[in-house]
Image (tube, rainbow, N blue to C red):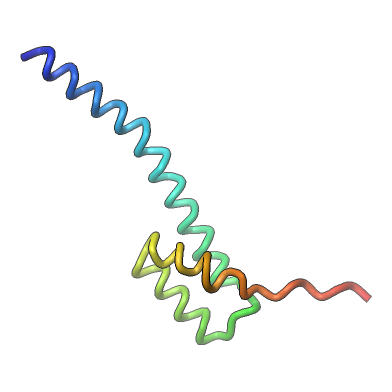
Length: 81
C-alpha cells in the first residue's frame, strides 16, 4: 500500500514540476498577446476590440489565433527623416 502511495506522490510531484512551468509560460504568452493586441497600431479600433474579446474569452486558443492571424498585421515603424 505504501509503495502505491509513494508512486502516486512521485507522479504528482513530476506532473507538478512539468505542468507548473508550462502553465506559467502559457499565462505569460496570453498576457503578451493581449497587450500586443491592445497596442497594435496596424489594427483598426473594431479589429482591436474583436481580437481583445477573442483573446479574453477564448484564452490560449484566442491568443494563439491572434499570434498567427492578427499579430503579423503590425505596421512597421516609420523611418526617421
